[in-house]
Length: 393
Ligand SMILES: Nc1ncnc2c1ncn2[C@@H]1O[C@H](COP(=O)(O)OP(=O)(O)OP(=O)(O)O)[C@@H](O)[C@H]1O
Image (cartoon, rainbow, N blue to C red; front, side):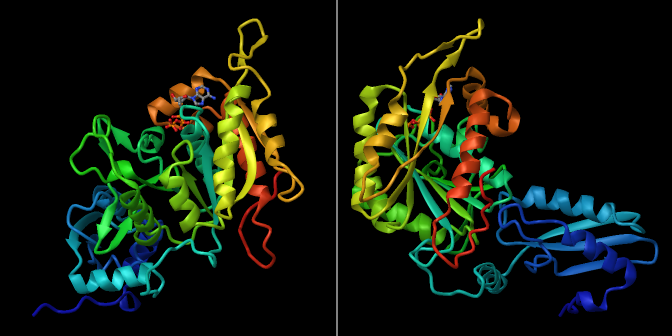
């Protein structure tokens, strides 16, 4: 039998320094220190300054393994007094894994919809009447902007037939979408630019998402959404954004049933002709009890080299939708902002580097950042709930 490693409490000064360095290494999916997650069973430093650290991963070949190993090595090697570092990666036993999932879930063993009526998380579903109006680009941009504000943000790509979120956020390369880690029945979403992201595109097995069609019927889609909200571990989020498919199909109805307290943001283009379908998608959300909190007009004017603005898709569509959704019963639905057309914004999305980070001065990126600040300030308006949101400036 091997001897049990000494606990941290009995660490020498040199070992405690290494432990403290390791306190700064976060699990890239759970975003908590690996020491707090009991992923480090042993730290030893001998009198010559040779450090040996064992790290326990949840499963063999976990997607985050290489990053954890690299971060641990850097942390150990940069600790004062350490001359060499040996990092041994191990895998948890089923028992340790159970303890791990329980710890991560905060001791909760009963599983259900994490975003039910009692949730403190603000749930915002982004919808549109038509496809191709930039709903996914804006949802991704808003998620990253809100995370930039210091909020804990999750994003569910529920646009099952046109999932584009992994690509826009740089989680997809050469037809390979980053996979979530599965720890028993818990699914850990990949994190992109501070946002925990889950997408149907991550569940296609070996299929190349560029060429694999999802042809699921309503009940299957409903079960998938249910599973996303139950088994995907998001932790304590300030905001959960959902990128819905365009229109008023099965998913919109499922989300309405699963998240009746969600807020809804409607994305439309400036074309008046697009207003009817955009209004209809908002009305479906309302029928399920969701609250429409605002409208975003995307693809507004395109700035010309001579300084003039070309209204490629007309103008006024966003204001029209907001006006048509405002009434005595539901109050005023504001136009949260207009996002101009911008080649740079499009190129950043294609490259998987969100413009709000890569080019915050770009006209479209700046508009998204302003809308995120405004959205953050709207809150759910429920007394006594701490949402951790900053007011708009
Ligand atoms: N403001 C903008 N300026 C320039 N290009 C934009 C802008 N907004 C979105 N786009 C581009 O338009 C295309 C469609 O955007 P996106 O995929 O976000 O639309 P969508 O509404 O989510 O579509 P669908 O619901 O059909 O998947 C993308 O190539 C995107 O980069």
